[in-house]
Length: 491
Image (cartoon, rainbow, N blue to C red):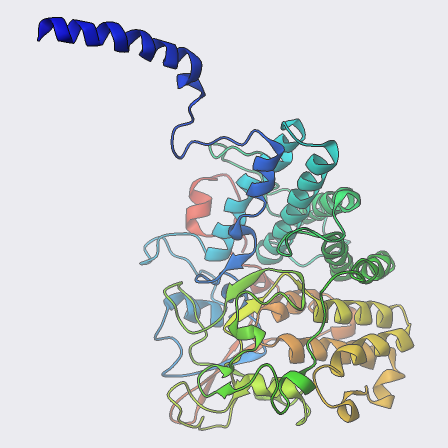
């Protein structure tokens, strides 16, 4: 036995050392793969974290704070304490002793993505086995995606952009390192963050593909549209319009298009049948893979409570928002006057049930409305009417789609009509929160106020009024400040 053992050792040991010399140090332990090639970084940009929140709708936090929705007592508030606090615009939404001891989902997802994006931005140009063109394109995608993320953050945790005060208003930390050990960030200013966002997008656009290989990836049109939107929100309309025009031009060869609800919700239409629980069965609001109208595809869960701290349980359209719809508007088929159990709503109020999955990147419908608003503010009323009617003819019969003549001839009235059209197109999906913030500092909407109504079972109501300007900005949560003890919070 000893002789046999020695013989085996004589044979095996030299082979083992030979193998070790050749390959042991080259073996990457499971779970420790390091990006080195251009293809590695390309695959990182395919990650679903950049576009899909199918089961944890972080943007529902934003939706709960917009003023085109109300709530029904008994259905609302039984799901999550965070829903109630957001709906009431409470000063503190996330307490350290909550059952969910974690940051808000949107803050958590946006900041966690920054690590991966910064890693790609900082490293891809030195990657191997790729071309300079490929490396620059991947870096541009990451920079444009970082800019989009930062635009979300600055619209949650800093004041609305006002040129006169942006240089001193506290912003949100600008994170450029891919290092999880770094803490104690500084907030900087609103102007510094907007300058950073604009620089990322401006420098990324020339290197972005017109038609990305994968539709969930950033395109030139998407980045142009986002930058145009940002300029519009800043009140820089002359800067916004060329970019919005460029976005439409670069979409010319893409497959992005508007659904025509006259067809899809007509007899035998593709969105039918209408299910009593979820509305149009085959509509994009019930599909998390439909990219048809998406210039920049980003999706979040916007249905009933699904274990994600939020939900839309008990939420209804306000009577004021409902009154904005013409009776022939086919978008009304995304709503029902029935409660989730099938019983009629006592007040006849409408519940949005046709949108389980909301798109919150950049939709083609929004691109039309952004350019329409920009044109109207620059006094191109004919161009503005053309854009808004291009959308409306896809959402209702042609006879109802025309902008009223008295509105079409009046710049202020037309701008307000387009803002209302944004509600008709995106009510209860989060878009209105961003509009509330910018309209609060817009002279055309001077004196605007925002309220939420809770409809009680006994027929009474409780009304909550958003305290301006403080609650147009969310407080930084406890967990975030724990790691940045010197960072000042919002009032």
